[in-house]
Amino acid sequence: DQQVKQNSPSLSVQEGRISILNCDYTNSMFDYFLWYKKYPAEGPTFLISISSIKDKNEDGRFTVFLNKSAKHLSLHIVPSQPGDSAVYFCAASYTGGFKTIFGAGTRLFVKA
Amino acid sequence: EAGVTQFPSHSVIEKGQTVTLRCDPISGHDNLYWYRRVMGKEIKFLLHFVKESKQDESGMPNNRFLAERTGGTYSTLKVQPAELEDSGVYFCASSTKGTRMGTDTQYFGPGTRLTVL
Image: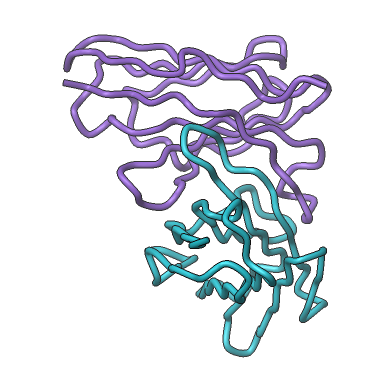
């Protein structure tokens, strides 16, 4: 039972354009959502997060949107750069819970 | 400040052998997590330590896996005996707050790639 789903295994985008990575979740108790970025042979690194009391959080070129009614969040990268090419993991947790649940990741290719 | 380190980076063993993975968290991080990722699938939670205590080990696959964190510093994850399906990348992460407090950001090590032949 996968509680966090990233249905697109890969995404290819031209440099300078917008990258949109999507994530769906099933557990309505989740109240904190994160995006991690992973390069080959490295561990995931924290990118951006959002609390369930917000619907948007922005950090430079990265914006995360949360739609609680649809149990959906998305990560927007604008403008996309070749260095953004990596695997992006969506993750979720809830206050009082003991674990963070990760999705399977979406591999982003940004073409120069 | 040093990040999370893991040793070895890669281990190849035969079915039935024993392997021990080590994780050194960021200094001062009470929370330590083990995860596993198998062939492009999700990063799956294995267990969570708070200092030397196991907070949640619900993700451990079976009793062939044993995790310890003596003294609340580094942690080891032993697989004995290893099976083919244990192959994957084992990640360790550490954090200050812990997922129970909400808004927990975890810092990951580079992982240990385990291959069981």
